[in-house]
Image (tube, rainbow, N blue to C red; front, side, top):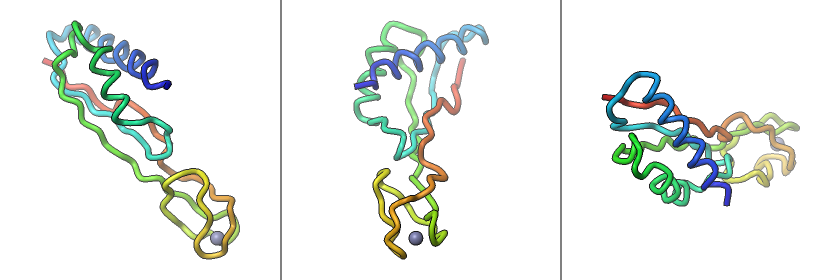
Length: 113
Ligand SMILES: [Zn+2]
């Protein structure tokens, strides 16, 4: 369960951003979460709710952008979508896939008033 510490980090980041801009309130923020980032969206949202409560972003809407996991087979260069790290290339059966996207976890934007 590392979602709670992620939620706390996000909460700090969002509140600092708001303070830097002398904002009264955070109305919305957007998170980018890759399918391979290991972050469980549901439990992150749950933790965020308590991490943000009482703060400047307590009532902010949360937007989630899910990034599909994508990779390239090291052997035959076939491009494929990845659900997890342990995917075998459907073309040649090779197990070594170089991940090209899907590991993202970041705060993409914050809307302030
Ligand atoms: Zn392959």
